[in-house]
Length: 488
Image 1 (cartoon, rainbow, N blue to C red):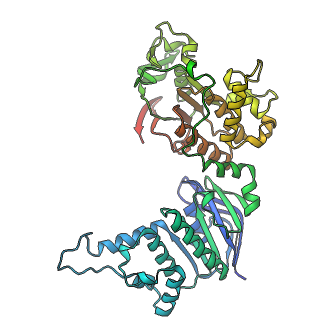
Image 2 (image 1 turned 180 degrees about the vertical axis):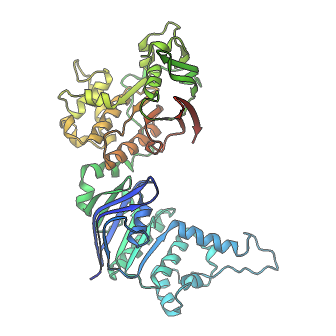
Image 3 (image 1 turned 135 degrees about the vertical axis):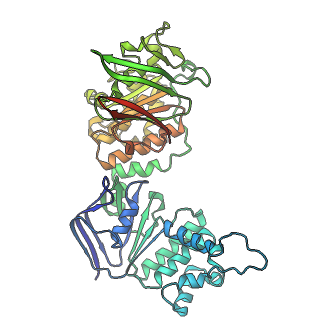
């Protein structure tokens, strides 16, 4: 029986990226699904399993001799090449269409008309064999390419995002065909973006996060694991409505269309040393910014200006939430518009408290609960727990959660008052790969479904969640820094 076995596998993808596969065994006839977000290393994993990547470290024993890998990129490339045969989408009346038929595509490498016919029957595309391949639908081209791969009778079939771009009916049909292949003894490996896409016939599941295989095992056990269940839960939150504010009528509104932050020629210095050096920066409505730079670059100084805590804010041309600094506003006039989460806040939250009470404390901007909680606040907290997928652990000790789950609860705590601006200061610091993915996924959901804008502060540009629209980068220049502002 053929086996693919990887132990402590390290695969170099680039100078800065490495795929880590610690322990993985795929037996002949097995059915697997590996799930990960964009950028998690899924396509690289597919290439590694198909024998197209060499392990730089560890051991890899692959007894499969005829692996086949199919990806959306391969399909797009093939369709593009077919259209280029005429170099036009419109043929003139006297121009011959030189595009290949589906039968020719299926038999591109192995010519066996009888086997081509049998595979076409299995996939339900017999009527398409004589049609030009380039005119097929997305689902039809996907099936034709699968037939092409199966012509060689592969002993390992790796499919990278096979359901991407298909409608519901086409996904169900393709899943049924793959189940038939599995029943016929094929070793089927699916690499997917969503847990919802895992077909019923799949028996084993792996989870990828930040180019690391974090979870591997039987489907039921993996999908029941708390962190994985929360990631799966987040897939179904798009379009949901966030819980309301405690008192919507008391919500502090900003001038319509006014920028949240305007800093003109900002300078902050200590002992004649510039910490911020002539920074011009505006955060307009609807923008979500990532602030990137090394330790000591001035990121924390900039944040302290935004939160109103820095005394040199008064000496700068700085407008926060429609009010010029020094125009008689109080510190509360600024902070009422801000939700703030940082590693230091996380460490400060050492009081013994339940998960529910940590969220409730956001209504009082306190660490712990020291006053009466209303029935409405209790109801809203239950809704936030449902959004996070944490209803089952509502009364569990806050510190019993994983570090990433704790960070999520603190983000919800900051959002209960629906601030105009959420500041996440190094929110991924101290988190392992699966917890980092969990936090990023929920930030995208919570910010995408609400009206709050985001400042996401980190050391690395690749830390950014997908909702980021702009980036402010502190770039070393001599003894100081220059500022690079980019729309993404």
